[in-house]
Amino acid sequence: MTPAWSRPVTRGNLDGVAAAASAGDTAATTELLAYLRPIMVRYCRTKLGRVRPISSADDVAQEVCIAVFRALPTYRHLGRPFLSFVFGVAAHKVADVHRAAARDRSLPTAETPDTALVDEGPEQIALRRELVEQTGDLLRTLLPRQREIIVMRVVMGMSAQETADAVGTTPDAVRVAQHRALNRLRKTVAR
Image (cartoon, rainbow, N blue to C red):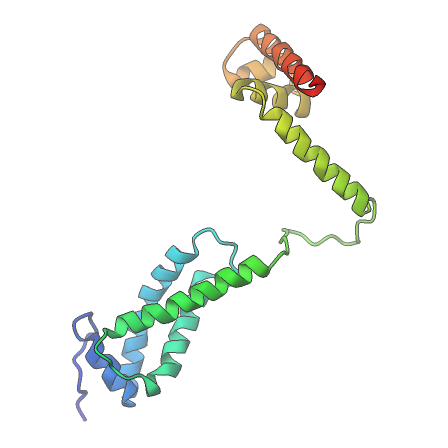
């Protein structure tokens, strides 16, 4: 039996292939899904972007293909291109991933600790977080160059010479910038 559609699958014959697949043609179904998968992978990668997804773009594209496969027996061509139906399914699957990522409050780590850390209680964690926020606010009052020097000298413990080499200036200029930055921080805290 010859198929009612022509090979290879293209945008031009996609609706015919979809009609044959929805009528039960297994070869049309196979070729249709093989054609759609790379398109859906690209679409999902674009739409998911930097979202910390629970599943990868490839997994979401696979879910789209499965949903399309399941919908084929009941799919009816209503004057719209089949690809718009597929993109509608994909949009819903991507939205599901975004919703799941928004609900997921876990913070993945590279390594799981062997024992539970009980050094700090909730109060100490909250106080440390508040201190970090206040320190960040203070550092943002400095000029970018001053902030960079303060972080290198005070936080990282670099010498004036090491800092000067890193920022492209002299050790004396680093000391002067550090002095001015610390004075500015003192005035900000005194307010």
